[in-house]
Image (cartoon, rainbow over all chains, first blue to last red):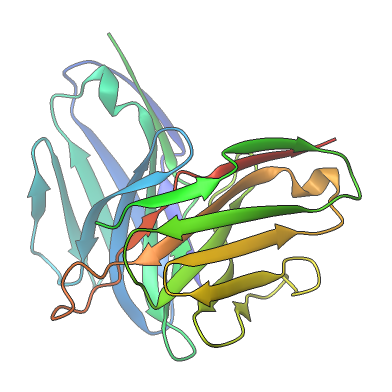
Amino acid sequence: EDKVVQSPLSLVVHEGDTVTLNCSYEVTNFRSLLWYKQEKKAPTFLFMLTSSGIEKKSGRLSSILDKKELFSILNITATQTGDSAIYLCAAAYSGAGSYQLTFGKGTKLSVIP
Amino acid sequence: SAVISQKPSRDICQRGTSLTIQCQVDSQVTMMFWYRQQPGQSLTLIATANQGSEATYESGFVIDKFPISRPNLTFSTLTVSNMSPEDSSIYLCSVEDVSNLAISTDTQYFGPGTRLTVL
């Protein structure tokens, strides 16, 4: 059965800390790994990773994929209270004639002043 | 990215009734997806809705319970039928990324979601 496992499930840090969120995946016909930030209802897109070892960066956020170990991490440096959210990772895989995403349960990040 | 709207943003319904959720996109997309997120859980794909064909449902979801319409390339509806408290969830539509048709991408963009509470 395809699965995506995220750790930790929740995390509380102080402003300015650096955090690393983990995502392991096991899917058939893997295509890419995606990260989303969910603050209220709608997940907002952060990164899509298709190649191993190539870091994607956006401001204080960065992410990298290891296709050999079936693993990805999301780093957030100098955390701010606005980073408090649930971070979801999803594995894209080829389905019947198209592609689908299977999501992990998310990591709930709380950044306290 | 596409601008996606959903209506209603939230609703409280009585068991046994049905609710239709609308999803509108500001650009034409072939693939639209409907997800459910039960309290404390992650997103689960209900079905893929392609224009011009029947929706493709995932294991555990059936058309009689979650009928979907896709009348054109910018609009879709999901109906939650004969609701029970177990249907209380956030329902999300998403669309494929069509910002650059020259590049194949797996990115999906999500609508703002519909929070449904069934009493």
